[in-house]
Length: 433
Image (cartoon, rainbow, N blue to C red):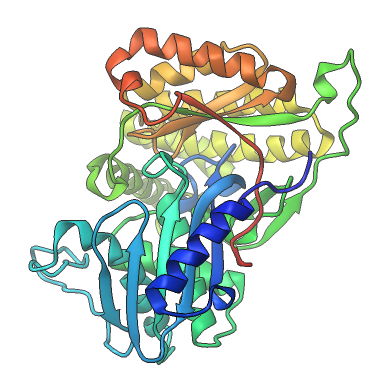
């Protein structure tokens, strides 16, 4: 499989120089956080219902260079956005729970639009304070992500939040476990930003290991790493050759928190769970993981069509995850890919997410040469699709998808900052290097 290629030495050197100049310090004392993007081969849209999921990181993501401040001041600049973000870690971060905000943080109206990207850093401070940490040391930092991959369904938001958490913890000599940081980033997303997602994204970014599939039970929080067997490169046996990961971009970019479709689907899942649990005589939290499979089968006829589809997606996706773990552990990438494509189809038909460009990309990818399987990366309302492909066919598959997508979405394809398809390898967990 090779060794980790991200971040490169040149990327690190460039960021260290920028931070050293910002802070007026020697380049050798600059610390670096790397926080990779994640993909979810199986386990789509069920983490918020306590389902079982699989994930891995890729060799692309967020890099945050920083040095501790001499006081409580935080000063941040970005490679993607203009302006500076400034705040103090000894100021308490609060939510504005009024009718306008609906519990979400409201940015200061006097703050320039380009500086609102600092909400993730403030959210990290909020999460740390929320759990009783009293920070005294700020940071001076520069953050950037892999060009063209932000807002692409790769959970760049969770990667950013985790990067800020690790930096603030390092600057204040806090020892925080990965499982604790999963909860901290959940507070950023759920409470500070008002997004009703689960813990899949944070878990993948913090727990993954190079070349492994990360399995997590979102109800019990238990996780394990599934190692594939060693790959033997045999000339005439395509099933035993290594894989590559394809990211196929739609050209649509929209923040998940601004799309009502995502939170609506979560509510529908909870509504389905409430009906099934009531019919089963159970008084517990209305999420689908609290419904046993036999209870679902016995009472699913009580669900109206939309809710029936959401529940069907949940229970069938759980089953695909379990089967996928076995396929991955055996190195059966063809079977693993079929399950991924079935997951993608269920996301379209049962979870009813996605939009025309993403669905077109999905249909193109599953027909591309050497592709084992494909699905949306993220909710499917914008961003990209992800596919696993036989490594020897990666370039050919990428060329095929580039050409076919240009035919059906010429405007979107022509405005992409890169080719429609980017070829990736697996990555490692978020860490300070």
